[in-house]
Image 1 (cartoon, rainbow, N blue to C red):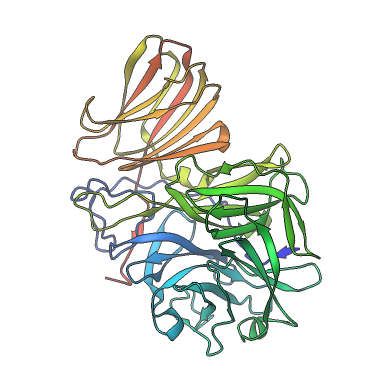
Image 2 (cartoon, rainbow, N blue to C red):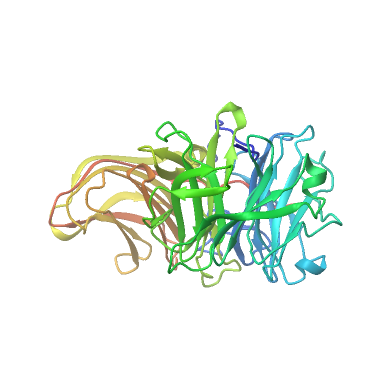
Length: 470
């Protein structure tokens, strides 16, 4: 089978001097909004944001696109990037312009086809879970793909489902889409379709059955995702089937494209993140530069911080890779390391926290920072203490027994932590109430709690250009 979502680049990335003040193009004011993240995407104008939709790489113009649920009723917001780190805000891509999306433009995906024009198609669901429709660029030659249109043939099919995946193709050329239902993920096929005109033409899509049926006791399968597992540690022909319901859950298994059925190797409950607030995630295949990568975005259900005009944010983009044949890891993309500031970086070695309840404060501080540690942990009370207003206002990031490595990204009010190279991760939130720099401490529980190596960097905010919507 061949997936059409093309994409990415592992490119050198310049380190930018930290600017915590608003510029003419960047509307973020980090002094006025103490909870504003610097390297997690938040859209402008500041408002509600939820599911990431249609992340893709456009090979024609060498750019990345991120669409997302935005405002109420839901629209598709849109931003573009050269590297998935720095972003330009674009106008709303898809609004409530047709009878089938009048209640809101709900979740879906984006596909770049491998036809001559490398056509881009957004697959979208309606608010009533009855219509699946598409949007296409008004002008394929526009490098930012700012304007989108809804073909007159919409919707392409009617069902009792939502959140369609990207369009993928079997080895003999049949186009397929999966979507989420109350019974699991179902599979649709474009009968006799030979290209983009047929795909968006309507009346050609037919349901061929269930891709995967849910396990008893599970709820509605929102935001399904379906892709082959990549990476040197993945077994050949292993597929990932993911759904969202009280967190993001995934299975690995075998896919029979003749029957259109995915069979999981087991039904153990595995999640991308230990926090159910990591939700509605979406991946895309990033093949820029000739090396395929699978990139994951997730909605972080953060709530609305006091004094902020925004609510909800996107996770940092994560690289999904296979390990141990049928397992996977998620880990921040290497491009994010370009935001590290070498000036003021700190390095520690052979730190041992021996006393139960001991907190050792490090000689390091910064509103946004990146931490890498190699550890030995034998108990359950070892970890990091992130302090905002001193010892009485803090967030503890605990390290599970047996962990050997930790990566912690602290970005104002959100903390994403990755354990053992991304075998597990945990997202946490806090409320920032002081302009003082954030400090870092180490926690002990009276058992072995060794930080054999510890590296910390302040992080610069990403460059954000919102001139097209200001």
